[in-house]
Length: 473
Image (tube, rainbow, N blue to C red; front, side, top):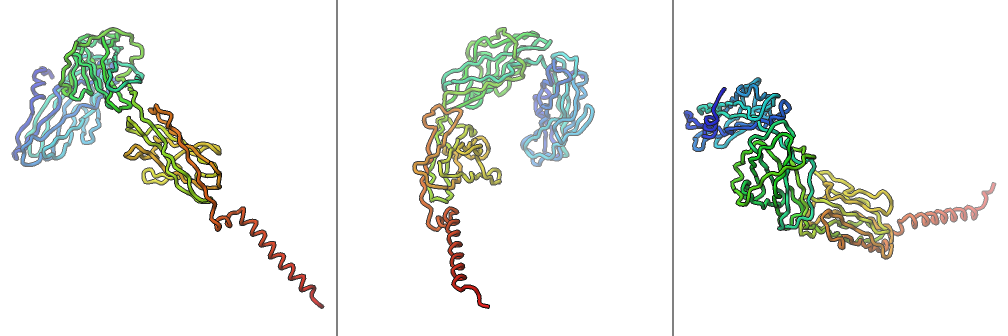
């Protein structure tokens, strides 16, 4: 099938709608063009992202009942194959697939009708078409068409995650994205760079060939340069980004494409001098995307939450121990740990916790030898931080004996704690004598007393036998 690009664009871009007998109309919202896979991927390529969205045109008096979409992919023969996709409501075989969308009132529905598979021997720009028809019991059918193309070469960026430390909030930091074209094809349409910033990071560079979203957390840059096969490039000057106040970490990610189509969600164009590309070495450039982990100079200052073991000998008491995050940075997830060495004269009998409605006895790892530390991993899922940045758990101490001046310790460890002077606190023991009844029941007291009593009874019995003397005959 031969369809001009202008005809394809007009068909898919204009709302395709038709009125049914009950005033119900459907609209197709599939893209005018779709890149199926990169030419160098060949038969190894698989893409399940193509979908056919259908919406009900607002203003209808009734829902569109039993919507069905029939998708014909026969126009892809020679440039792609199709197979079963992730859409559980789609069935078919060969080139024709049917998807059941159900009944819709004023909203839309979308599903992938099939998975696209590549074929060997294609070149960038090879294309075909997919046609589709949506219908309902009470709405006239509407038809659309999408031009499906084979993309340019795969562009690779650094495989290993990059790490940047010491970024001071508010001050520009630099990023130099690079890529390699390891394929046998030239990127004839030029190349594009996509950057995404997370965790309070903002892209602050404004080159004239880059476009940005409204929050400066995403950027798209187009380059007319045709990257030849076997070459590698980097941007001519670094892009800059900043970290927001009180942010401990952030993440940048970037990728390159040989099909430079600017996303609609990047409407803000830069006003500075445009970026260009400069040749560089291609070693280590083997990934489809690259992450850059950013650590700022902000700290999360951990300090211990301590308490006193106070009770009489023989008592078992609870003491709440843990860690308090003094900030100024706040962690989205608990990381780090605290370690507890009990005071002499005590025994930790349990550290109870609840996880997913299951009660546990030991929230912390017990020491392997006497006098060692209980290790409490904040990332173990056994701890729940409070709204004030405090994470605590009850230690159950049995007071075994009085030890004047006995003190245990609690120490905190945090990956972003840069103030070690407040990481240790003491756990004093204040033990009172056991009450008299408890002292009498202790084995050290009770056993000798019992033995004395038994001896006394035996002595009395022996005395009585001797008083009676031998029986007369």
